[in-house]
Length: 426
Image (tube, rainbow, N blue to C red; front, side, top):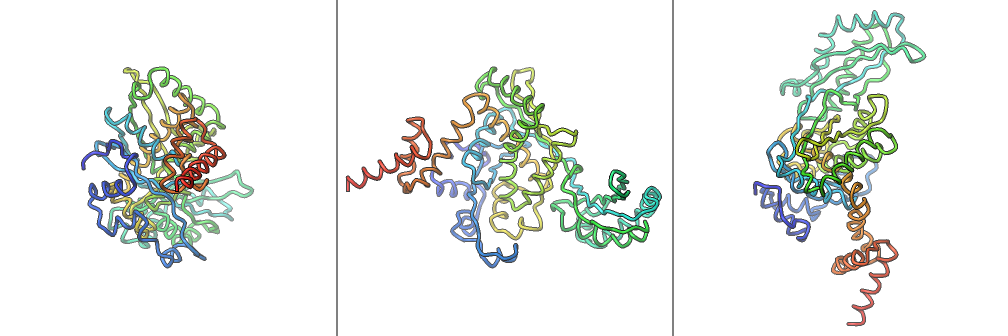
């Protein structure tokens, strides 16, 4: 299958969806079993990943459809417990599909390691000495990861900052490391720790912290898409979306929830692919604040055709090698489903999902309100909570939507009525 457009994908059974994806992406029977959960993640493997492991918590894994990214159709794997996220991303992607889909770019794969130096009588003199010995610093760093260097990466430059706002002046050395297709935390941290004694020797100071920065401002991903005004509901809805964006751009209280909606999609893909959700989230929110005021991660405009143009820019420190991306079988299979070949493709896909997620949320807010679609999907969760059996859930949800009441107490009442009727028939 060469297209991500699958009519009625949400209407077919989970088994049919899995078979369709497996056929399209040539998944093995073992990979199908991994995705379906039929092959559980071993406790032994979990114990190797975290301390004091006692079990495994499963998160639903869904497929977002309709994504065309840089001309390539992709099924996007998303791990999330929030009911409306996958559907919202898929619907937003559909409105951009016929206008070319999403276009992405990446500024590079450079991560920063920070080395804090204190106890300096001459911090600016120490800064100069660091630059004078830059090559020695880079050589010592790269000696710790010859594999990364052989792949074209490694430590490539040094920045030095004097911080005078603290109680005592301090020097902060930034190692700039090209981590290629890895997220890079282990490589950067190893280099920072290895070079610390040499930094002390050069500066005559004391190194305290040696750690990666998650504000990956040399690893920015950008995505752009045009969304058809007619598909969104017309010119008035588009104008209201612009007003919603301007609200978020001007008000940090709104921007916080606005960006949380973006991260609903981003974090779901990051988690599904075994990447570090906390690193990506902290970097995104820090980047939203670099101007000195917390702002929207997206920008929205109306083009000359009256269609909506959306763009997003944020740090994206993700990889496809190392860590859980390789050790977790579901993450490996998720990357295969998405046809991801390198970290740049993954970063672009994640940014596209974040942009789509933002459009979907603002479109709902600007039109019928966020609760209509969200609660209709959430009703399935409520039906399960109410004790509806597998073959009763759809009927309970149907009745709740019919009466436009998807509160838990109403769904519980509907579930009891349906089960009472079944009991009477028996």
